[in-house]
Image 1 (tube, one colour):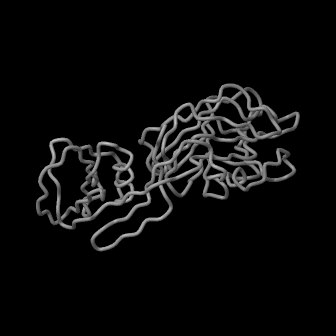
Image 2 (cartoon, rainbow, N blue to C red; image 1 turned 60 degrees about the horizontal axis):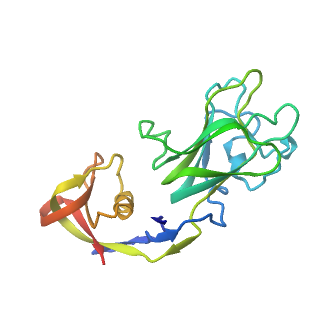
Image 3 (tube, one colour; image 1 turned 90 degrees about the vertical axis):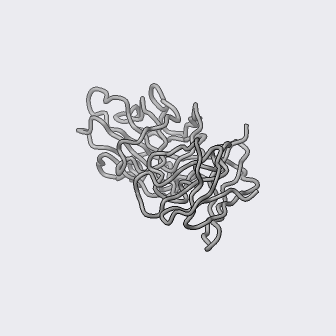
Length: 258
């Protein structure tokens, strides 16, 4: 199966926006996408959310590297910002050891988001996987996604709190995506123009030209998109079956360079 991912390099010129949005061959990357990336949590005790991406998968509490939520947190969650859009294929989790705490990483959802779910709580979560039961403590455990989604934020959310002192605990969480990106595409920008079409998709939260270009690249029927520079409310129009391009001072038209 061939999928698409986001490249690292993007630059704007007066006449074109070139985006490294290549295709890739599916498989696990050798690089942990979550390593030392920004994190957030619902609550923490002792070590905050960054402890789960510091590269230290020592499962002992004495390492001071395991994230742990407060005992009173009945709906704990943890998330990481990958600082780029990737197709998430696998997560690797390390659970804490110790007689008190080796069952605390259990029954959780791994969700993928385009935008920060703290700032945009109404966006729909896309489920990478649901892990039922306890993650065995001590050694890293590989958890493949049941469905692969492209996104920027990966969030772990526990389904329920067990009896007693069942603090949500993660000693290390690794995120993996594609291992080989090939080819590239780019879009030519025509300022102050808008393409008309009877088949337009207006994605929610498509608030940047980079995000709009990514959505078009992921859509195999999209070769053009319009972007409104003056509005933050649905500024992106993904076009199928475009027709004429007309003057419009608020919009820019982008076309795929073949």
